[in-house]
Image (tube, rainbow, N blue to C red; front, side, top):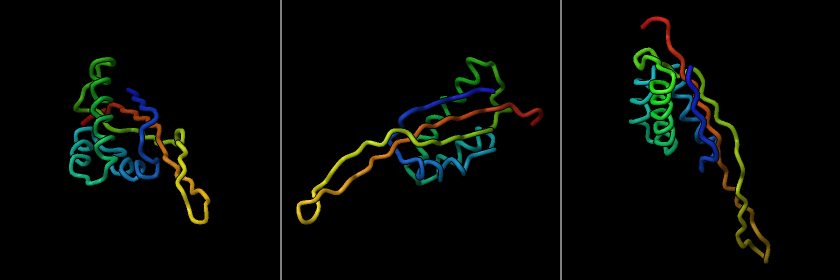
Length: 112
């Protein structure tokens, strides 16, 4: 089992969860192929993180890359950056720039 964590990614968790649901419980190579052709912005971020998790699993834990699959992907809310913009009648409107924490867990299948 190999873990990968990425903190404070500047994309909202709601948008990143849409993409992470596509690759959960897939083989790693199949998940990377799915993300390569996905049109969402979160797909590129998730693909980079998945490559890093794969490399960590191979180099640090000595796992077989052909047997690895995406066991868990957790996308949690991180710090929200608050900005303000002028609004009507001299008021201000709040702009919330959300960010995410990403945790990927890869496991080895028993047989192919």
